[in-house]
Image 1 (cartoon, rainbow, N blue to C red):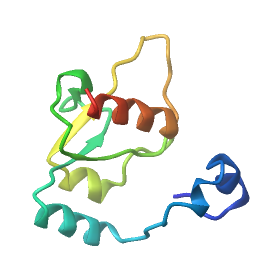
Image 2: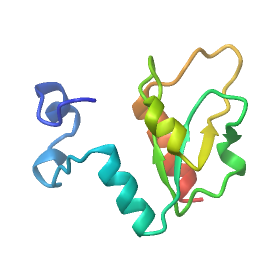
Image 3: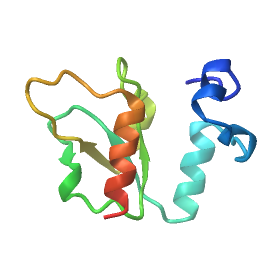
Image 4: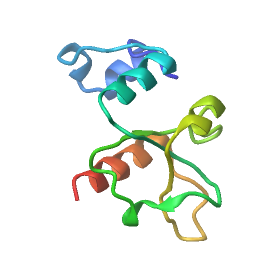
Length: 110
């Protein structure tokens, strides 16, 4: 997880870090809040169970994006209600987390 105030993150945020409150929480707190608000949690994952994001109803879900190298943390992966995959050309190796998050958020608005 990146430090929200590291110089690279602050520069990449183009000033948004100064206008948007940063919330830090444990997975257990987030999971509890989603459960209480009746918000299902999905994760992006490379697995046989993962459903193509274009065919998934994700408009009212929380979606966890893992790091490019390690993916979603095991405890989050195991407790998620749905696994999603972003289909890619077989010649592509992977997407970085920022690009994956942008694609997921775009699909959430469809």
